Image (cartoon, rainbow, N blue to C red; front, top):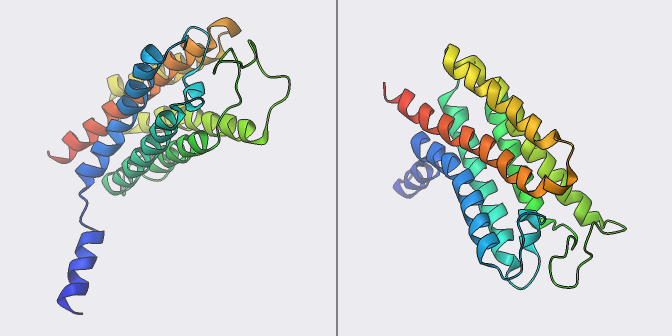
Length: 216
C-alpha cells in the first residue's frame, strides 16, 4: 500500500468519536436556535400559530431548509459516534440506529417542504390547506420519524444509566409524548417547539455525557 493510500485511509477514519458525538450534541441547539432566531426576526411570522417548519417557505426559506438538512447530518454524525462508543454495551444496536433515524427524518423534512398554511407565507390559507401535496405528506413523515425515533431513544438509552439517569430519560420521553399529544390544536406550533427542546436537550446531554464517560 502506497503512502498516499495510507494517508487517504487515515483521513477516512480520522474523525474521532468525540468529534462525532459533539456533532450530534450540536444538532438540537442549531436546529432550535436558528429556527427561533428566524421566527422572531422574519416579518409577519407568528410562532403562536405557525410551526417552525413553515419557515422553509417564502423568500428566505432556504435558511430553514438548510437548517433541517445540516441538523440531520449532524445527527447522523452523532449516530456514528454512538455506534463506536457504545459497541458491546447496552443500547449499542438500537440507540445509534434511532439517532440515525432522527437524522434521516430531519433531512426528509427539510427537502420535502410543508404546504403554505396558517397565514404563512403571505397569501397562504389562514388555516390548514384543503388538500395536501405529496411533499407535504413526506414532510410530515420526516417530522414524525424525527420526534418518534428520538422519543423511543430516550427509553432505549435509559438502560445505560444509573437510577437517576434512567428516570430522567424516561421522564423526558413521557413529557414529550404528553406535550405533543395534548388535545389543543391552537397551541400545536408552541408544543412542537417544547417537544423539540425536550428531546433535543436530552440528545445533547447524552452525547456530552458519553464523551465524558469515554475519558474515564
